[in-house]
Image 1 (spheres, one colour):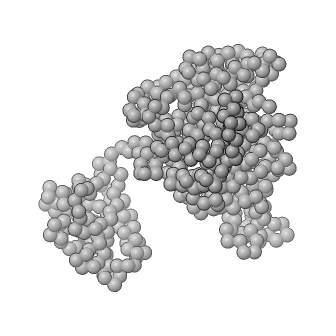
Image 2 (cartoon, helix red, strand yellow):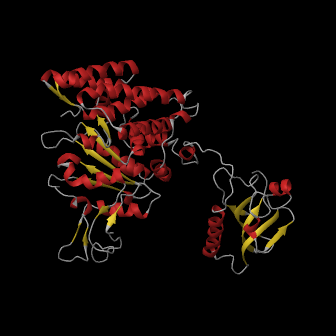
Image 3 (cartoon, helix red, strand yellow):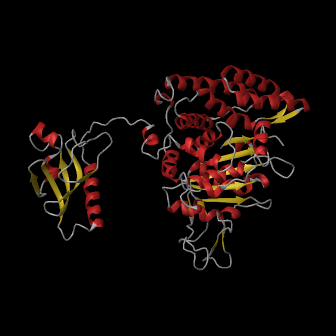
Length: 497
C-alpha cells in the first residue's frame, strides 16, 4: 500500500474486505522484535481510531479468553497462538492454526460490505492472465512453422475454454492434429500433460480409452497402452495444470461405441465406473498411479478430436456434433503458394512449454464463469450491453430459421454460444468485433448439423445466406455457398469429403 510495514504480515480477507476499513481479519504476524510468529485476529488501525478499540459490529465474545498483546503503532491484535523462536519454523503447525482462525472467522454472523467482482477480473489478472495468450501463441506457433489462418487460434482457444471437448474437421493434411499438438505442447509445462492417441477402426468399446479389470487377476487393472487413462489420472492428481487428450482420426470407428461414457461424463459431471473393486487397483507390478473404482473426468482435461471425411470413416451423429464446437480446416491457394515458396517441417521442439505460464489461468478460466458481454471494458467494445442484446436477437433469428426442418438448437447450445462469445471477446481484446464471434458460432455450432436433400435444406440455407449477408458473417456465408453449390447434386452436408 506504499508504506513499509514494521511487522510483516499475511492476512485473509473475504471478497470486498480490506485491511483498512473492515476492522477485523485473520492474520499471521512475523515479529522481528521477539523472533516469534503470532496467529491472531488483527484489528485495523483505521477501525481502532474510528471506534476506539474493538469494532462494535464484531462480537466481543469472539476473543473472549484469548491472550492479547498491544503494539504501540498498530494497536490491539488478539492472539490465537504464539509460536516461540524455537517453534517459528514449524510451518505446518502455523498453517493449521491460521486455518482454524479463518474457519472460525467465516462463521461469524457479521454482514461485511462486499464489492461485486466482475467476471472479467480473474480472467484478466496477473502477468500470466490470458489477455496476451493469442499474441504470444500466434507468434510462437507460427515461428515453429505452422501456418494459422486469421482468427483460427482465437476460435480454437475460445472453444476449449467454452467446453473441454472440441472437434477439428476438414481437409486431410491441413494441420488439424498439428495445431492441437502444437497448442498442447506450447501451453504445457511437461510432455506428460498431453497425449496424441490414434483411434483404430477396431475400437468397439471404451476399453481402448479406459482399460478394464483383469478377469483372471481381479486385483490388476489393465490400462490401455496408448496412455489415455494414465493422462486422465495425472490430470486428476494435478488440478492446476491443463492436460490434453488428442484423439486422432476420431471417426475411424463409431464414436458412440467407444466414447459414449466420456461424452456423458463431460455433460453430466458424473464419474465413470471403471471396475468393481472397493479399493484403487494398480495397473500391474510397480505401477504407482492406481485406478479408482470411479473416475470423474478432471476439469483440467481437454479433449480434442480430429476428423477426416472419406469412404473409410463414419459420420458423426447430430448428438455428438451438438456437444462441441466444430472447427473446419481448409487450405487456400494463397496459403499453398506461400508454403511452397519455403516449405519447412513444423518444429515442435521450438515451441515446447513456451506458453506454460498461461496454463494455470487457462484451467481457472475454463472451469469458471465466462466473461459477460455486458461487462466488457470499453477498450474491448464501446457498448457491451448492446452486444448482449444483439446476441439475443441473432439467436432468435437463427432458431426461427432452423426450426422448420427440426434443426433448431436447445438450451445447451444457446448457453455455449453465449459462453464462447464472452471468451472470444476477452481473448481478442481491443479491436474485437461482435460479428466475428457471431460468425464463428454460426459456422462452428449451427451449420455442422445440417445435411439433407435440396428439398429439405434449400429454403433453410437461403434464409441463413440472407442472415449472414445482413450481419457480416463472412466465413459462414462462404460455407453456405459451398453447401448450396453441392445441392445441385441433390444432397449436401457440412462435412465435405
